[in-house]
Every structure is written in structure tokens, then in C-alpha cells.
Image 1 (tube, rainbow, N blue to C red):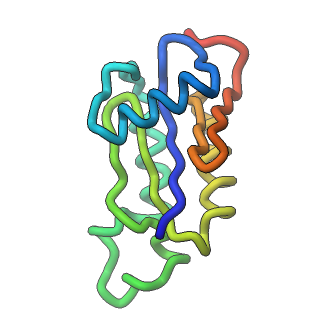
Image 2: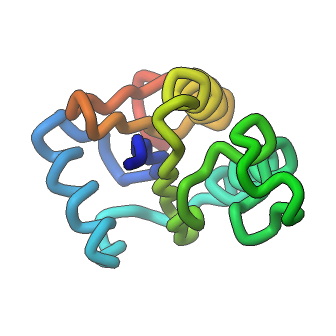
Length: 124
């Protein structure tokens, strides 16, 4: 069982209802609702430098959630990331990813609560 979070860039701020719809589309591989943004790739690189993708973890660390909290490979495009982590690291990953989204002016979505967070007042 995993806990999921998403980061994305859209042309406009979404309501929680719109964010839920977008998240479901992204889970189905439909990425038309996001826009390309270099910040998504920069966030991904910073995040995976700290916690490598599950496929890149050394065998000895495969069960060490402090090294790799991910339960599956990160789903990504040039406009979004969907991150699935083990439940024992859900609070840590929530804070880490939400802070990185704020740092890079990207939206952060928590599908468990159905809430989207914006660290800025308007999208550019």
C-alpha cells in the first residue's frame, strides 16, 4: 500500500474538484491538462538526488525507506510528477515534496485529502 502525492504546472489555478479530475487523468496517462515547465525537471532532479528512484537503488538499500521512500517508479512528464511512497514515510514525503513545490512555484496535490496547494498567487 502506498501514499501518493503529485506536483504539476497548469495554465491556471485549479479548484480542489478540478485538481481531483486532473490527477485521475494523469494516473491514466492523459497529460493534456498540464503545461511543460523546466521547474518540474529541476524538482525531480533535486528530489532523486536525495532519494533515488526505486529502480536506481542499490540492492543492499532496497528495503531502506530512509534511502528510497518510493513504492514504485515516479510517474512524470515535462509538466507533472506523481510520487508514490511507502506509508511509513508519508508524512516526511508530504513535507519534503510540498516544500520543493513551493520552492519551484509548482502546485502540490494531496489525493488522500483531495486538496491542491499553490505557493503563489497567480500562474505565469
